[in-house]
Length: 186
Image (tube, rainbow, N blue to C red):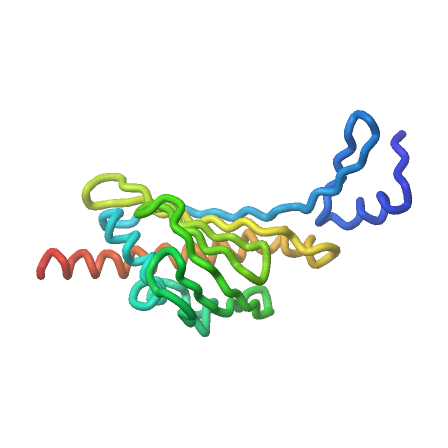
């Protein structure tokens, strides 16, 4: 039978924290991470899709589902790395405010939004499939809150965010297809 100290018992029930016990008896506390990702084929070339996502003034703002996202404001920049955007997300009965700094670790392929107010990091990865299609993955990683809130975040956030991201991917496809068709005509 394994015995826990009082602090370990309290932390054990606080499911947002995992207890790692080393072989020498040292106890390490590790915050639990939440990871959500969804992927879809977009019927437009990768370069056009990436341009759409990297343009926070005339592109990205058109693809976020309005029933969840509001108050999207470009505070600095507006295209790609160095852009700072603030916005609100209504989900699960509450509203969360974010202020993201955008980076481009792989220019033309990977766009990362890192929230300055929390541990949330959202990554958009655009992969060419052929001349007319691309694959877009949206992935978010964040720490769970402590306590019962963290438990509910780990249970509900993946379901809610996947639904939001699936709607966003559909909108990315719709806007990218329209823009690509206009480019072919023009």
